[in-house]
Length: 116
Image (cartoon, rainbow, N blue to C red; front, side, top):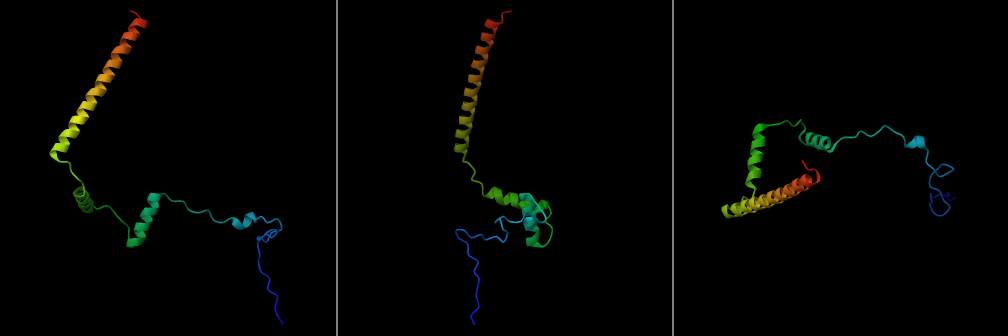
């Protein structure tokens, strides 16, 4: 004899859930709330699991890392430094002049509006 096999078909008019309304039971989806951690906490946990021990601060390692990072820096040449400094000084002078002119204008407008 052949056994009848019931297939779980989903399609028009078929519901995949076992409840009569097709909605899932709210009790079945409840569980323990997930523990939330910050990204920094997650990174620390990953570092601890990789090494198998707690990571601590080491001044020697920090200074070595600083030296390595500073060796990667592209330092400006003397001429680039002088040109950049000149650009900054000119920009500061223009901003100062603009602010001074506005201060002078507003001071005279206020003296006109509110005479002594």
